[in-house]
Image 1 (cartoon, one colour):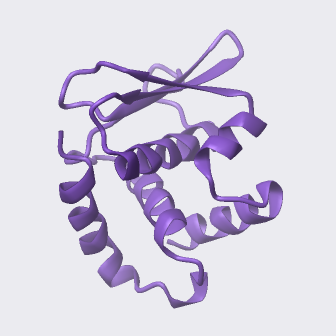
Image 2: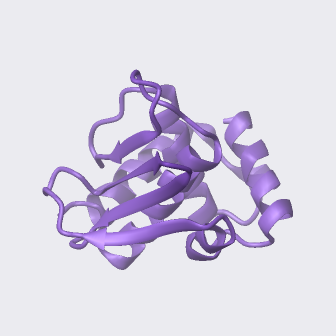
Length: 138
């Protein structure tokens, strides 16, 4: 959790905003909304020096903000997969890696907490699960 909080503090200082569309614009990240399978809320990848975030068109507006922040966390931290390529998919109900959990924490905290000192790490997972059921189920 400390790593995520430190990164949010960096984002606040570096970009002066937590608005994912503004951050993506400052970083020249292309954001696209497409028709995707129901099991995929979004994904990000880098190709030929450019970075992209693709979001399922059926995700709610709040869900879209969460997916954008989640995928920005991956892109800004240069996370790679087993093929050493930058590509991640957001699936609201399957999280298997530390990076995926961190990206969820980052997105949720950015959206819901101004005061980073009073976050209860024991409650956050439950809050994220409730948020996902409400805003990412498509």
